[in-house]
Length: 287
Image (cartoon, rainbow, N blue to C red; front, top):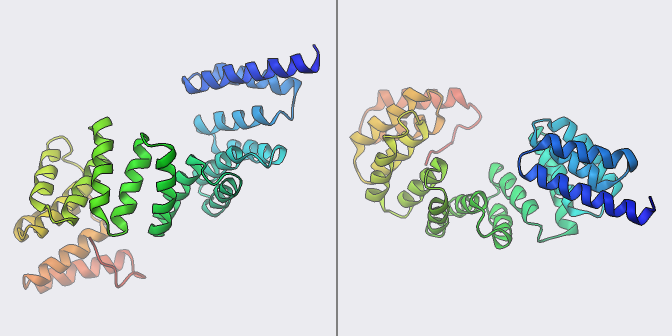
């Protein structure tokens, strides 16, 4: 087979492999990819695709090795750097993962998935303005992506702009009405803008289907406290702690609530528990 024909055959095989991978047929995809690599061991597209297959099937360390090789073979391809970054994050190599994502953005500043994943890293590290900027770029390229919309909503809330978060959370719930994480984010944003009655009703409606969710009780408690229903808030915080005894923010908020109501012994007990759980965060404040 001539080189041009071989190149065309390889591209066709990899296109078919990509289709198999996207359709959830990794075995069929792997057969085609390895056929290409048998003839072209340094085919960077095939190496990258095999790396993504490894990542998608739960073999992250193998994915890192393969995707690192793809980057070495074609270091000007932003997609490969982004894929490597995701694989590194999956293996808890956060600093290296962030560096790979930044490398992708150096090559292609508008790369949607690189901006999205870097935004998630920024959220995790409390760099909320950076997160907002990255996630806004991601959403411009992926305006219908629920994960990106939800993450941008969280970033807006963390930046003190819950009113901007609300339409994003509502957009996600139009597409995925049973997404509990977004439902809770919506309740939190409603509380932050003072719509505590709506937030309480929203949380109480969710409780029927999710009675074992500590975070749900916590957000309900915050909304109840905002609505000046302190006794109900105390009960909701206690429910959260019954489900998750090491819920630090619940201990912190409950301590403050007890202190405001003159229950100093209970306030001190929850404060001590919070400090014991995270001794280096003495000045921590809950929501």
